[in-house]
Length: 280
Ligand code: NAP
Image (cartoon, rainbow, N blue to C red; front, top):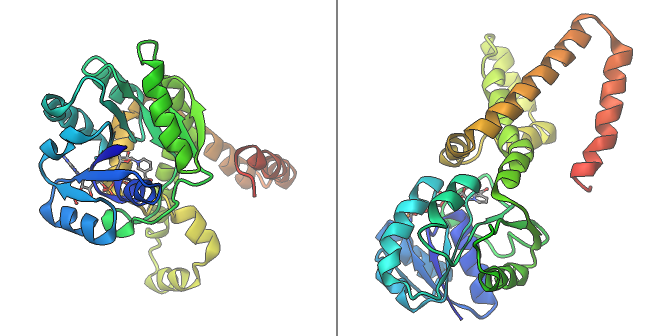
């Protein structure tokens, strides 16, 4: 099967490496010619071009550009597609993407592989990024079952675990576990940098270890991705940030009141419920 990938960055690059390893023939399109050449050199694509016309021979196309470029890409891509071509995207927000693309292309399946790294761009591409990670598909009532099956089969070949949900449910759920953590982690880094004693700031930077690495990773990642998550999932992100603000205020109150018993109870509850989200 011939598979197209538009946007040869971190996610598009990782997909290309895995799909070629599965025996699929991969045709890549990216914005810069230099990225296309890198894609060939790194083994991300069999052929790569800045011209969408290269995708005319593909049966399935993964849209892996930043969120703002997905709709303009589909509009430019349509003249090259045959009616059976299946389009799917990997965008981190689903409702606005599905609402925009589904009326333009019936064989469109919204998707989101839940895997990432701090680094971005094709240089950060690696094999097996999606293995044992969730891969969410968000078909709607008009999405053909055959198109869903095609995307699901490819996602399974990446060793990912498939989930189906409505685009709006996806956006609310990922706001809690992905988009809110990016903002919380960004605020943590900014707060640390507000230390006014330069000697203490340097000492903190020297002492930073695994705890800071874990908690700062997503807030110190791809700035464009973080901004796009906020822009496209604004309502859900604001809702989760407001809940977070409330819980932060509760913790501040407990510390101010030296209510160590209640604080410990809260931390004990957190220790227990964390395992409902993450298995370690
Ligand atoms: P990335 O590393 O910055 O890659 C995006 C690539 O898209 C860029 O390298 C750029 O390539 C290319 N591009 C930009 N505009 C384009 C256009 N108009 N046409 C063709 N190519 C274009 O970003 P990413 O992390 O892979 O994210 C890509 C998508 O995956 C986003 O929609 C994001 O929401 C989603 N996603 C990201 C993660 C994550 O954690 N990183 C996880 C899951 C899903 P050039 O080098 O050619 O300019």
